[in-house]
Each structure stands twice: as C-alpha cells, then as structure tokens.
Image (cartoon, rainbow over all chains, first blue to last red; front, side):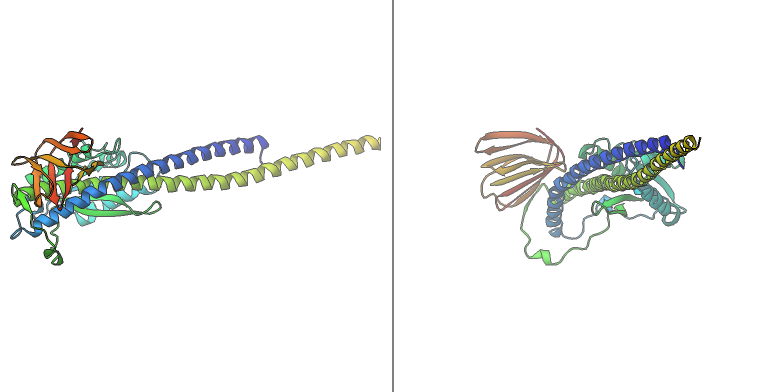
Length: 291
Length: 81
C-alpha cells in the first residue's frame, strides 16, 4: 500500500500543475482572440488591394514584366520556416520543423538551401543543424505588427531580385479553426502567374490612372507580397495560440483524471489504515480480556 | 463622399467627408464630390480631409488611392497621426 503522505504530496503537485495549465489555457484563449482580430483587421486591406490590382491589371495591354515574377532555373532556395517563440503547444513547432526538413531533403535536394527561421523554436533548431541562416528577423513574434514583418519581407524580396535566391517558399501553420492547424508550403517568389478572369471585363470601370499603369503595378505588387508574408505570420500566430489552447485544455483534462485516480488511492489507503488501527485495538482489548 | 483610410494593422479612418487632398506621385491633388474614377499612387506626405467636425490631416508613407462613385479608399502601408 502506498504511503499516505506520499500520495497526498502527489495530489498537491498534480493539482497545482492543473492550475497552471488552466491559467495558460485561458491566457492562450485571450491571445487567440487578439490574433484573430488582427487577421480580421488585415482582411479589408488585402481585399481592397487585390481588387485595385485586379482593376488595374485587367486594363493593361499585354502582361507587364514584373521583376518578382521572373522565373529562373532554381538553384538557390530560401526556406522561410515560421514557428512560435514558446513551446507547450503540442506538435505545432515540430510539424513545421518536420515539413521544412522534408522539403529541404526531398523537394530541394541537391539545391543550395538557406533557411530564414522566424520564431525562436525554428531559430534554435536550424542553428543547431548548422544550416546557412538569415537570422535577423527571428524575433517577429515579440510584438506582431506590420512594420517589422514588412522589413523582413523587403529583405527577402530584395534578395530575390538581386538573384541571391531563385525561389522562396514559406512554411507555416495555416489557421483553420481553434483545433485545427494546417501545415502549408507556399511559394512566395517568384509570383505564380494568375490567370485573368474573363468575366470581369464588362463591369470594369474606366479609371484615370496616375502616374501610369506600370508605375502603380510596380508599386502595388511588392505591397501585396508584403501582405502575403504578413498574412502567413498572422496565421501562424493565431494557430500557435489555438494549438496551445488545445494542448493546455487536454493537459487540464489529463490532470483531472490523474487527480481522480490519486484521490481514490488516497482514500483507499486512509481507509486501510483506519481498519488496521481498529483491528489492532480490538486485538489488544481481546488480549486484555483474556487475562 | 465616403472616405476610408486603411493600413494592414487597422482601419485608421472611415466616414463622410466633403473634400480630401492627397499627396499623389505626380503632385498633390484634391478630390471633391463626383470626382471621376481615378487610381493614383501616393508619395509620402499629408492626407487631409474635411469632415463635418473640421479639417483633419495625417501623414501616410506611400500607398495608393482609389476614387470611384464617390467612394474613396486609401491603402497606406503606414500612417503617422
């Protein structure tokens, strides 16, 4: 039979762990809501941007040559792996690391791969693996806003234009809902050509364009790329909190189950001790009577 | 006219205005009611607009403006109030 004191101590430690996981779950829930708000706030911008871009490029004669859409034979690849800064969120980070390693070893095998980790977990992993890194931007999650993300995206885009990389892929967790995150691998650069929708042509507005169509396309395409990058970061951020919420909720449930079992053991032990004591007293009394 | 100023982080302004001035890439220009449809790139500079409660101004760092059917949409990368 287990020692009464030992069981009591275990009960105490499990229940304090449960309190912590419960608190973490609630914090994650609050952060998740904020992360989702950020996504909702970004949405009008990205919708309007692509609407304007559509409007303007549907009127353009012939396709303009956009530097970000130039396809080159792929030799040097940049993998942008987006994880979180903190752990305790289930398989969230290891999924990304696994997907990145798979992509590097299979899809890009024989190519020169550079990794741009975003989030501390990715940074730690790829640093240990001795990959060539671009590590100036791995702390983007300290405070998620467009400014720092924009700088990271600009650096990537510049490197692509200069020819440092021939292809850039993003690997991140897409936010489906609180319980589901989807690991996606998305080609960031060069831009995949979008087929023009034919039906849009008749309700197209004739716009005055200043200074010129080409100038605006040149201005807007990088913008929409930055937004795509930002969206990946925001999605990953929301996914992280969702994953952590689910993980912590499970941990709380597990702790509750453990507590139930421990309490059973505790009560059983206590009862056994009492029975024992009574037995001893009765035996003692009998012995006295026998005298 | 209806004016919206949007950045990736948030909606900075939304409301009715009687006039708005933008730092166009080819020079500053003003939009009044029933302006023709226009799309223009913006330089860094002040966007100012007049609402019923007075004239306001804020600085945008590049972006684009679309005017269509008395709806003005400003997409700015960054807005400094």
